[in-house]
Amino acid sequence: MILKIGTEGTVHSVVRHNDKYLCNFCMNEHLFGTYFHHGLQKEMTYCRVCLTHYATTENYISSEDIERQKELIKLNIPFELTDQQKRASQYIVDQFHKREESLLYAVTGAGKTEMMLQAVVEARSIGCNVLITAPRTDVVKELALRLNDYLPCTQIDVLYGGHYNITNSRLVIATVQQLTMYQQHFDLIIVDEIDAFPLNYDKRLNRLLKRALTADGTMIYLSATPPDRLLQLPHKYLPSRYHNRALPVPKLKYYRVTVKSLSHRLKSITDTTLIFFSNINQMEQLYDALDEAIKQNGTVVYSDDDERHDKVAHIRAGKYKFIFTTTILERGFTKEHLSVWVINSEQFSWDALVQIAGRVDRKGSERNGTVYYFHEGVSAQMNKAITTIKRMNRKHEDTLY
Ligand SMILES: [Zn+2]
Image (cartoon, rainbow, N blue to C red; front, side, top):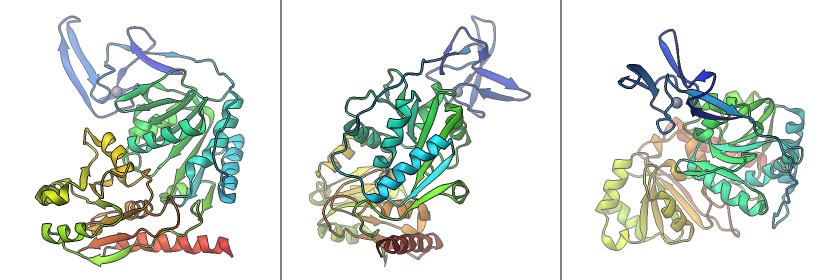
């Protein structure tokens, strides 16, 4: 069902239970405003999360059922899947037919997008509505780009903040934040990056996700760094990257960052290098303090940056030698000949560190990009990240012999 807010309906958009309000549209329970409405001559409470839809205690939610329609999708994959990808693809198909909530635990660079295609094709062939979702806009954009290539004759609706392209809602790629209009609508939901911020802690987003699924629908999670609770689900572990090379093991280096030392390092860069900072202010100050001659080879990208989509496209096109960034490029970003540095890696969580290292050596011919965890003291989280990467590599080697 597709939900809409208007003057008619049976359920109020915002309702009050005891002392608490709930927005029935976006599932927010905490952020509301109240004011005196002069036209109605009474107090009105509105939801501050879905402001543009204007959910209030005075208007209603209506729902519309969209007729299920079968579709024969033609896949256009210009290469053969690896054996591991084929097995994983079959696993998702099987779990979908069994209607079993499951996890695909795949190392970064295993080629997860390709593994979900067959399930999408089968689900759509029997008229099921399909959603592919992720918590981050950048990941959703990357998925949409690739799926448009693989399914060139299929209408794919794409939804993320600032982008709204909805036609029939039968095959949708969307951020979880944009699922407010769906209730019991999707028979198959594939959640990429289930462990990523903000989905890993935001209860509202988890409620939106569950609400979007039909009563007998199937949820499949994909992750390279799943939290323990997801490992309780039926799952399949994929230890190899699609090109069968091991994950790069990060190098640790004690390093106190200063403008002078950083300038020196930046001059010697050969690969495109993503440089991760945990602190936006520190990142901007350091960048601003660089000489113009160095600066012109690089850029800064962070999550609230209005130009970030253009910048990411430029990075992909090879315009810059180095990119100062926060964790927005930690996932879903793929480019060949890439190295990464993490500045003050003791301030990062283990899963972010594993994801960041996983950006390297994903694409292109054999070439060893490097991963540096620069630090002012090794943290337990750094050790956990490195142990995890080494364990994954051992499991990968086991599959080779
Ligand atoms: Zn709301």
